[in-house]
Length: 145
Image (cartoon, rainbow, N blue to C red; front, side, top):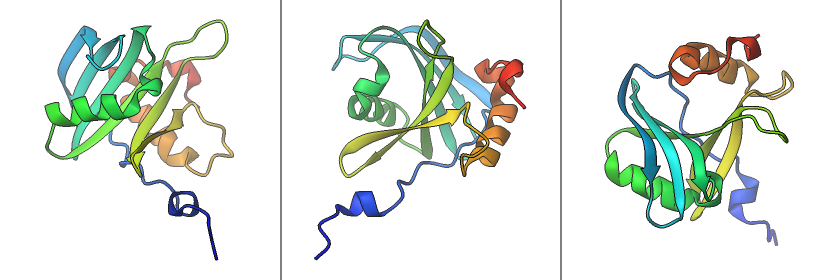
């Protein structure tokens, strides 16, 4: 009998990345109450719904509270796809990068969407998204191939 959880057997389904069309809001000191967390929240409309980019500024990083983050954003933006991206600025230990959130089996899961190595099976779509989104999201041109 297979005791591997079904989540481990199947590839996680992340919403398809869509480039931003126009900005809906930009809040420099966004706070979500379930955590002691502050962030910059930038929201764009896309062809399929909403792209929300959360940049941690103080307190608990977004990656440590994915269910709360998703619940609050989904209640604010109930229509269409909701693409949640965590923007992690460079620091002394890691380079700047972007992670995408999905919720499956009651848990939050993150995947790196930029930068990724050429060996990543999703390198092509992630590179296309980064190129199409660079100006709006502030993805440095120097990291784009």
